[in-house]
Image (cartoon, rainbow over all chains, first blue to last red; front, top):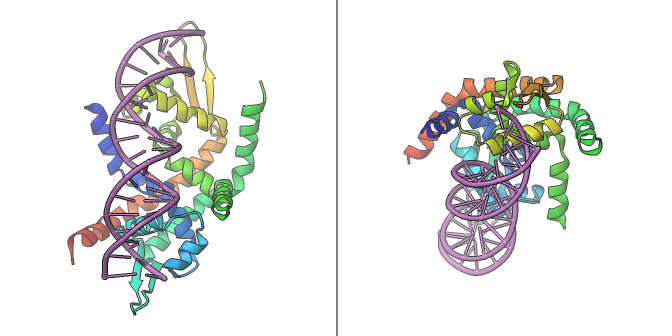
Length: 121
Length: 121
DNA sequence: CTGTATCCACATTGATACTG
DNA sequence: CAGTATCAATGTGGATACAG
């Protein structure tokens, strides 16, 4: 009971919701890719070589739903779809950049700590 | 091959590594809890009512390994263990706070986008 | 009190094949 | 080209019981 309530509360917490999204395997990659400018679907698929079509679409849909990316179909016979960051999405990308900057500045410390934790004793 | 290589590269990327951690279900909660000061194990367990002992220990170990939290056993017969943020961990908590602040400022937008995405058409 | 090990259920994800 | 559906494998997380 208490547990249920707690989990519900956590799920509703803004910070946690956003952090959760950023943790999604492909979100940060897509955000980073789209930060450089609009990209077509196939283009994304080629550049994010590790993502299956399914995951790409699925992730993109989620981001679109949250108003973070916009989907534009330059529809002709050969379907053309383009994804771009919305202003909201750009804002999130900026916030994310802060964490990434921290990460790049401190990986060395983390790796050192890890080595010492694993190796010694 | 290409896929493997890509995934390996992603796994090695500092930004992604850290983002991944923050996305771990309990990391952000623990960081937030510990940011207020040191906490004993049982205390954490009580306050994070949704986490099982297993996940708590497991997550804490990971954070300790990365040098983000420090574990101090005020060992007597009745085991007493205290966790606290290291300076490194505090730094990460700060970076995280930026994202959380953004989140709190923009959940409304996200929810609105979501409602419009779900409801309309 | 704190931490570990085992077992199991569930969610996530990728391969594949197929539709506009 | 873009997106979807289905299925199977995998990993993650929780309950429980146990050890230091």
